[in-house]
Image 1: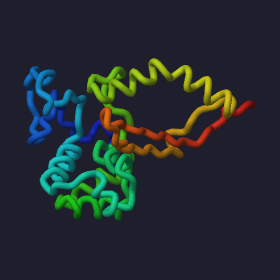
Image 2 (image 1 turned 90 degrees about the horizontal axis):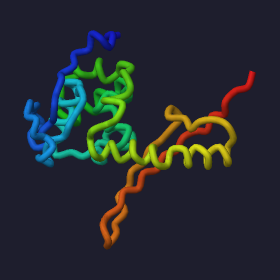
Image 3 (image 1 turned 30 degrees about the vertical axis):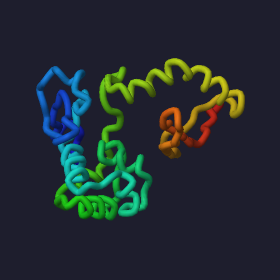
Length: 183
């Protein structure tokens, strides 16, 4: 097993969504094809580039792996761990070397980026928690008692809801309730 300090990490300032090349330009705020990033593992860049080259979506890869698209995306960003079979199927579908399987099957270092995210879409979720976090906590505790929602025994689904006033994003988080233990 490779220690997280030994894992090769490629520092980037931004990723160009059109060609997935690193850029040192500080003009990323004005170009919608560029996204601010933290440090992105090299394997993530390879997986995303291969997915784009093959014209695949995360939804397409659901049929290959038998896993949800959100879980597959989290695997790309090294936030999940694949079995050897899952890694092999993914790499085969993307036309990548089986040499990458070892990294995909390692336990990842979880959590990406700075404490306050800078990507606008990710920041909205942070903002939602700032505004609705305490209300959500109170409602959950009224219904379940003192505890937390698991992010381990957990699923996350994302749906596109067609709406004539503008399409909507539906995010469903489903986590097991874990009451705090008294001793």
